[in-house]
Length: 200
DNA sequence: CTGACGATTCACT
DNA sequence: GTGAATCGTCAGC
Image (cartoon, rainbow, N blue to C red):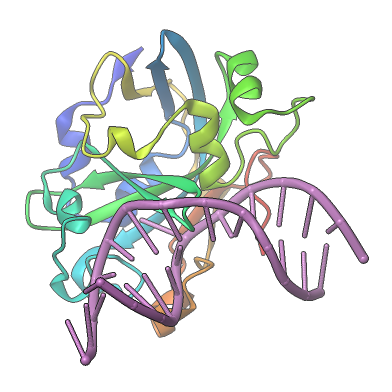
């Protein structure tokens, strides 16, 4: 399967990429354990004018520096001291756009994911929600800033096409501080897919 | 140096 | 439905 080319990540509109990532395959091969899943839920963070974005108003700190790099890499940070949240950095350097990957539909390595998640049974909570998804794929802040076009960490075109009418658009949650920007329909998912995280 | 807090999840009532 | 977990980040002093 074809790893997405650099050009895919340099598109100007982060919303376009947020939609295009639905149906793509996210793959990790950490600790020699192959795990992968189809992306079913994404969220756009639209740079310096988006109050929900860590880089709002050109905020530039050690943490946000990753988002200011050229697209095609990961931006991973620790949330609530527990959860490793993974984003896809897009656009050219100095344009801090990112797409949060919120949920996947498991493909390869489901046993490994189950073990990492410490679950007795596989159910829809295995990879649903950004913290859970990262845990299942073994993604941690240790991989922050890494290329998404490497052997061990990449996104491929799985030949799955999601028609526009199957794309559900909802407001982002958990960012009340973003005020009016919190209401924007930046949270995208595949309509009817059971692996999408529960809307709050 | 200090303290408040978070792009969440889970156990428990 | 409610609250705890848990620690890096960031603004302010």
